[in-house]
Image 1 (cartoon, rainbow, N blue to C red):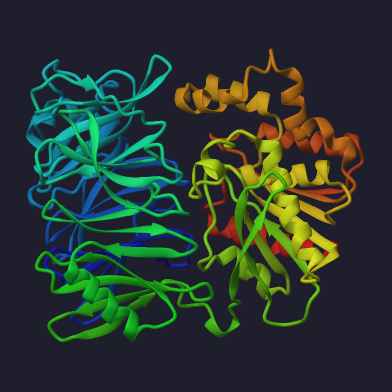
Image 2: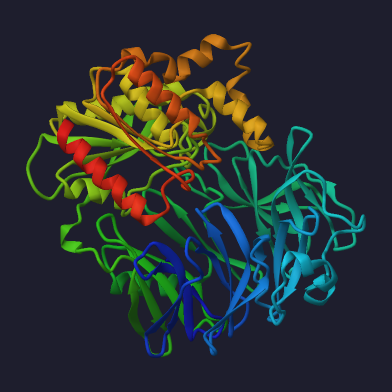
Length: 603
């Protein structure tokens, strides 16, 4: 739902299921009356990112299949009226809502006006533009394209813009000439120059209120990623702001700024955690935690005058509740639960599981046990995607779905998972066969403890998790009773060819770290389970969206042909108009009903 508060603290807005729940619409809640208003965009389209442009205007983009952006739009909170700012045939990304500039919003348009990308300020009082009328009306609606002294955007594939306190875009992350780099300009009219920090190792968090300083996160020759102050003029780290000795401070962390000053951060340990640098916020956090014990209470948004705060509060067994803290009345009020249809009494608890690998790494996983029955339980191992991603020990819908059906659920942060330091997350990030050993070791550990029934084990999930599911079936043919793979990768050489063919330059650059398939033929044969289907002894469930632009559906279609060739029992779930995952709720519900039947049959 991801609610965000208006600057005056009177409303919140966000994304929420609309009608039958098949589309994601815009949700507006009046905090005085606690009255919700919902707005649907159109069939087949979801409201994507939502920000406040000013007290009266909500700005949002919409997308199709969680992939294709379709214009820039606004909602007048008082008139309850939606208008289009940039035509829905244009891809637009919001760079900065420019709260200090209530008349404009800063956006990036990668494909517009004959393929001329630009970053621009868009007037919030502008009217709709369609492509055929865009050129002559551009100057009326879009101000100050911020193209730099050369009169154009920087060359290369641009991956992100960082703005300073005045709303000027001054740092860009790009991929050019097979190199990933940051470029920087001192002022709007200055030329772009490469920065010395490496985007492969460092992430630009934002500008400090002190001129010439920015916040960055990276290892800085330490064991874990920390948060640092970086001097742009001297090209060096000048201060360590924060570092956890066990968990990385990832770019997915939240950075709490107020008037240019960094007052706090939120990052993932086993669960999300707030760290406040401002004493006032430390006191507020303490008060909230005392009032709502036993839950992670993340203060993440507030009114401009710091009188009202938004909190999301949750635990391993309870989904997010959105809470309003009013300092003037000293009251905490629930705005809305994120999943009001769930019966919280049916949810299961999760425990942290840590174990050492034979080569000395300490890995972290999460074990959720069903409320009914007793050990040893049938167990499903859920493997996250990525592989440079991670699970946390917080509420997980897929985990609770399976636990409710009587299964223990194990989620493993294998080596290469992000968030656990240089030795676990960075150095082995392409050692994908060792990752499969980590997963199998965790499964065996839980079975050896008598928690899981060794004769009723399954492995499943999507993307790299789908790859790992098939690896489980080929590398450990006697460990699992069945495997479920969703939008999975099975042929790494084919993946690299597809990335290159689709001009996904950086994605191809990253995965080319695996080597050249022509020069490392044995390695690619070993890591590609499509070559080892003859070893499979268990039933396989294969699901894929036919419009997947990340991992081609040909991966799963080829797998099905190999399963048929080797007489491996299998079931399939292919759907038109779905991408890298299943975003149409009707398809998603149908898939999990089939998964439920498949597991019941084979476990």
